[in-house]
Every structure is written in C-alpha cells, then in structure tokens.
Length: 158
Image 1 (cartoon, rainbow, N blue to C red):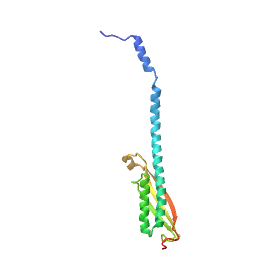
Image 2: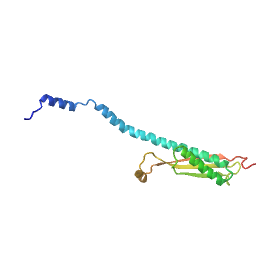
Image 3: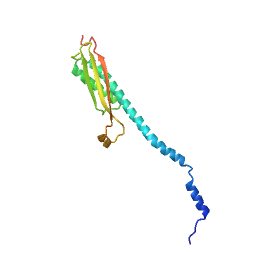
Image 4: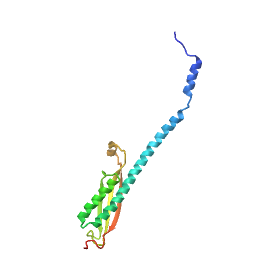
C-alpha cells in the first residue's frame, strides 16, 4: 500500500524550494569571480608591459654607457649586446627578442666628444596566452627606448 504525503509536508517542501535565503552569497561569489579574473589578468599584463618598458629603457642606457667606454666599435657593440641581454634578464624577459641599433654623430663612431645614440626595441609578450592564440593573433607589445651618451674628450688618450 502506498502512503501519500500529507498536504502540509508538500507545502513545506514547496516553500523551501521557493525560499531564496543563502542565494546572495552564491550570487556574490559568481559575480566576484566574473569580475575578479579579468582584473587579475589586467594587473598581470600591465606588470609585464611595465617590466618590459623598464628593461628596454635600462638596456638602452647601459648599452650607450658601455659603448662609449669601449676601445673600438666592434668591442663596444659586443659589450652593448651583453648589457642588453643582462638588462632583459634582470627584468625577467630573458627569452624576448630585442634589437640594438647604434647611430654615431659625427661619423666615424667613438670620436672624442662625439655623441652615440643607442636604440633598443623589443616585443614583450602578454602573459598566460596559449600557443594556439599566439599563432593567430598579435599578442606582443612593441617597446622602444633611445639613449644618448657623449664620448669623453679624453677617450683614447694615454
């Protein structure tokens, strides 16, 4: 024989199903996650770009400094490349492709009292981008910095 529930038990069950107590915390957590994840990614991306900007600017400044202290241009360019690699590594961007360009005023380079302009450019990748997205979309930020340094008027003397 089948027992049927009394109407008052069924009514209490329906009342419990309609009651929305406790849903506010679930809604808050859901909305919080939806808003928090993009915000965290934005902070990570800005931090990566800022690190890249500091690395490129520091690399240009250091490369110009070591270049004007070099005895000749080939040795100076090797030293400038090392300074570039160290600056990128110091900011956690060791695998980033970077280019170094040197312009001297006046030519030839490293003349006493001359001015050396070093331009460093790099493509800083955005963090946490999967490889399949990297092949389809541009996910790097181009950065460039220029630094100038004057060759000492006593360079090569002595």
